Length: 594
Image (tube, rainbow, N blue to C red):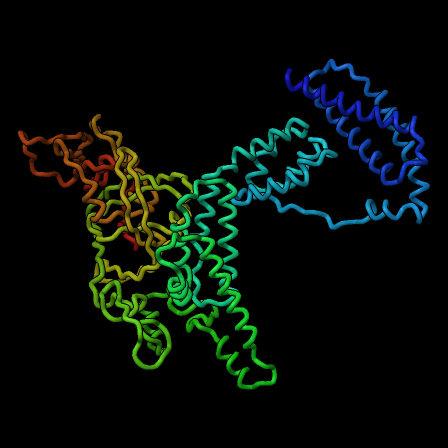
């Protein structure tokens, strides 16, 4: 009711404005009024009538029994407008009397466009401020028109927030509130601006262009952070420590030599120093431009602009920063460095002794870490086995992994105590949206066969039956193994004790194996059994039972067809020999793929 009273009062005020203009054209002598005044009053009349219509619509939405005489107000509006036009048109056609009007109302300006908002937190404040200035504060537009403009300027997730709102006046304020609640997140906005400062690329060589780009980026982010009004009492010292590390060594050293070490650090002093240095470099570079007719200058220019990266011929970085070179296997990097005769320490090309004293972080020898090879080291071994005569059930467990966007997936893993390393399939890595790391690892299998694995990735795995979680470095393969078990077998006659929680409740159903957990994970997940559990599966009878064994009753000679149950953080895993009669069809030979 309070909102209705306000809108009725606002309509009365607008209606009074229109009445005064109506009385003005009926009483005043319009011939004595300048064309500028007439045009201003006519424009005010149009704006007032649009406001009147909008208020009438809003009031009808709140009170359907509203008795406003809209027809009489509309008649007075058209009469007043006609009187203004009748006086303005003759003056408009008179060149001597219309110069000011034409200059004011006929000049066409380029249209103002607003960049659509796509959901980036740091872009919300500039977008909404510009939208408010150009559209929200425009009194000539009603709320339906403003809502239409707002919808056209939203893309992606922001548009999804408002697309289901009905196209009516009340939806405009609702849409603004939805956007404000979703994207006016001061903590997130400040964090993203700080991250942009932290992620600034280090200046390799100080030039006027690189320094000005550095200053521009810093000032933009600082201004955006200040707009959010955070507590910035002590931030100068912190930012100076971060930003000074982004400078090249020569500029950073010059800045430190120029500062008073006893003075309080000021961010603005730092930026002013960099800006003055950029001005100096710009003036020097302009004064040393090569003369068009000087051949020696041309040679110097070619030498200066030559490619600095020996591998990809890029002008933007050196060999040790080349991403393509870093992705090469270690052996290929070493071979390339030998062929191109680059320095084994700094990866540059120079004569004489290298002025750097780097040591490899892997072996501590005097060479660059990128050139370290594992050829002399013994690679990890993967013990693989298969029994042709027996049908062996390998232990499996269902585990939870979390994608980059927070989505949770349940995959089946094989627990292999005979493997020194763990594996994961390319399919799961792509599903999780993760980026593998470069790895040059040699894997030894049965018959001493070697396989090179180029990628690995750390994966956090979670148990479905306990709070247990751990991070495993998995080597990435297209396939880990075939489906396990290879054939479905009947467990309807197997009695599982009620206190057992299976790590894989479908251990008898052939399933895709997307991860292999090696001995490093297998043994850290084992838990002590209160009593030894076995599931006997006689080969020549239809009887089967789960037999707990305690210390008081030591186990008898184990049967050749017996499943063993082990307790782990993932739950109880099952493995061992199976009789052929358990299968719906005979098992084929087990082939393990790596």
